[in-house]
Amino acid sequence: MSTASTMATAEPMSPVDEAMLDGLQRAAFDYFFEHGGGSNGLVADTSRPGSHASIAVVGFALSAYPVGVERGWMTRAEALRRSLSALRFFGDSDQSGTPDSTGYKGFYFHFLHMDSGARAWRCEVSLIDTALLLAGMLTAAAYFTAATANEAELRTLADALYRRVDWCWAQPQGAALVHGWKPGRGFLNHAWNGYSEALLLYALGLGSPTHPLTAGSFSSWTSTYQWKNLYGIDHLFAGPLFIHQFSHAWIDFRGIRDRFMREKDCDYFENSHRATYVQREYAIRNPHSFVGYDKDGWGLSAGDGPRTARQRVAGRRQSFYGYAARGVPWGPDDGTLSGPSVLASLAFAPEIVLPAVRRLLARGSPPSDRSALASGYNDTVRGVGKGAPAGWISDGRFGLDQGMIVLMIENARSGLVWRLLKRSAAIRTGLHRAGFRGGWLTEGGPP
Image 1 (cartoon, rainbow, N blue to C red):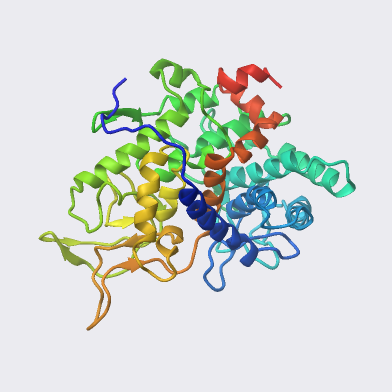
Image 2: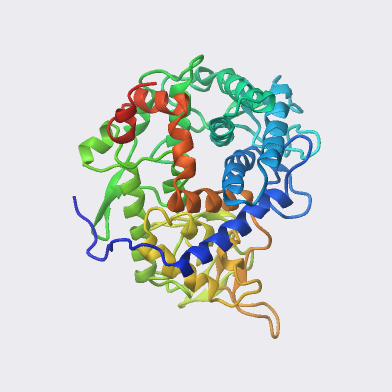
């Protein structure tokens, strides 16, 4: 195993750092108050006017509400009301798979109209976004354990909705899971290949008590992994930073290993630690000479970017990509960095995350946390027009970003979400069936 000599050991956070993180976490949490809470429990994909709901963002909201209760940011009654509204809606939703329905075979369309909950934008039934939604439902069920009628109803609904998903349907050609399905078109022509956020998807699919994925599905997927050495760091490769974070928002991978990680003498948590350092090293080397890339300026991930004409950068004509999944070291890279992806790395590498967050807050953009919470910022882009300021910051906020900030800061501070999902029979069963052993998973034994 090779690791970079620059890797440091995390030190306890100071009261100043705790206060800084508390403010950022609370600001991210407020997104779900401001852009959700209707009678159907849906939450907007972004803060931009007219945004449709995202089922993944609902999953993050359901997971964030317990954090809000424990931090004193909302009452338990309000968190329960919002959570029940969402689960009741999905329980009663149209599962016919027609173009104006909400889902099919227990899965759901990626985007829904905020008011009616019907499919929006002719989008696909999305497996990964359904998995993020289900993770939120299971989190809520693990948190609301009181012997009251409403909390019992929530647990019953979460269990029924999870059992309703027909995971086998999403394996039309054998072991490989497809990305999605559309009415009138059928399955999308893409399957999951290479390491990705599908780690959570497979855990949920394998854990199903009704329609589980086939036994060989997980090993078939992991056979497409790429183990690489970048900048002297051995790790399981994925370019965008979010891939190394999403599944970890719910599952504590410290000390548990599947067959692939046993062979590499690693685990997925340590892998994310290494991937965070790969990102930082790429920014230090800054091969494309972008402004603001250095040891405290890093974080290439999926997110918003500038939609502007090409500009000359370091002697070349540089294009800018709008929304894209940026990654290292092979791109795409247009100088856009993601503050939320840095914050979501806190549990993995606080020793390099905290200086980067302080740098973001010192940028001076009003309000002071805008660069840290916005989907992306780019200091290379020059202003257009006389007197226009240099640099770019995404307008508004994206719900996925805010959810990752809330959950991963909380996991770094208290481990709350990790503890809740360790109680989930679905998660424990899925991990066991995927071949995970060791640590907290073995200590508790199979569910």
